[in-house]
Image (cartoon, rainbow, N blue to C red):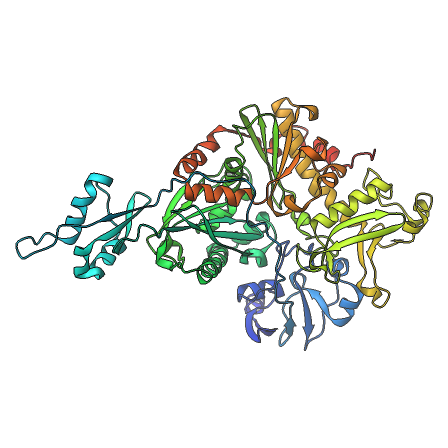
Length: 620
């Protein structure tokens, strides 16, 4: 009985800067209490205590004693001021929690240099001028329009919205109307001849960012493009974290679905606000994303993907309407969601294969979408092989001690020479942390000089003196095995940016996962490194990483920097292709059946392969 009474106690607390008061059961973590009340306390690791992003300042109550996770992820100054990880401590009665707000704009690759797209969209507009209605010819408006359409478009059913549009036109129907066809249905009827105005939107739903492009379906031109941080980021930095959230129940599936649709809505409104295009003139939307993102877009629980045998609900393409997804365009507009290959190789990789012409180009090619879930495709001749490697969010700066996304203030380039360290910072701002490309650069440079051993161990200052006394002074001891000072300010020493030994380890785990996937596919296809002709790097990280650095840390096979090609947002380009070209869409539908999918967890000796892939190459 006492247990029942205890668990029913309600705790009241407050979150700033929203000035939001909440009530929740005793024992609820600060993070769960925030997320349960739509307060945007961010987490990358979904509450495991490993990322440090869910920090809150605790006031008006006794500050919890810091645990090991707090001490690992927060500085001594932060701990002394009362900062704690929200995922590690329960809500206290009358406590006030302040959390960081205002996500920094992150750099997103919104387009790619993959060339023009053949223009044959599924959306069509047909102008017809029906026989006028008279007292002696009382044939219904739609019947008269259908008579005119029959010769050019056959018998196509209208949506209810199209019929409602028609009714609003009244007597102006006799002056001529434009019929809009999308998804094998008539989705709208417009007054007059509007055949020169026809628009659609193509989206790439990433785990971290969402990119949308407003396209002119008549000319094939990009009218506007916008991007934003996926609002799901507060629920975790990778698909595994987000699937763990959906396991809490259907309400949480709805939350994640609402979050990504909210991001899409913002992008749509942004694009329309910057153009003369009206919402009702957007007739079709195409979406590509990984399998989990596509499930959540559609409101489908993806949690079964997270455990063996890793079964998704659907991998086939899905058609719906904008109204069904609650998107602010013509409600009967067709929504087309790309097919997936498997649970962890999704529609974004289908789009990558489509846009880079994999399966049809010359030579043996490896294509990698480097992200939290590294997806890899290998073309051997005309044969395709694919796998997914759970790299984690290290390449995006998460789970790195002073890591951050590629935003203003992030160190993105590092060059070491003659005892000095030169850094490039995004927007030339004061350094605040280090993003993925800077992390790769820093490790590659220290490997080249010899301050990091092939095992990944950072040398001590005494060991480094024989290599470079000036750089040796930058190596300082800490509880993780040492740290290298990348940047320091004499006026504000506490603002120094360090590369810690544990950061090197995180990079090894991330790059080891992807390189293991590459190695396994090459073994599966019977190829050696010397057989490779080209390596394609896709995505935001793939666009900014230095090819030489990627080879130096062993992220990719050593094919030489000139054989590594960055293609930007290939998935977004593939989504555009599916919007603008029915021919491309048909090929996208066919591609998954041509791929031999390899499940890494089922590979014999996988752990041994992974351990080998984690090591760094010996510098030449």
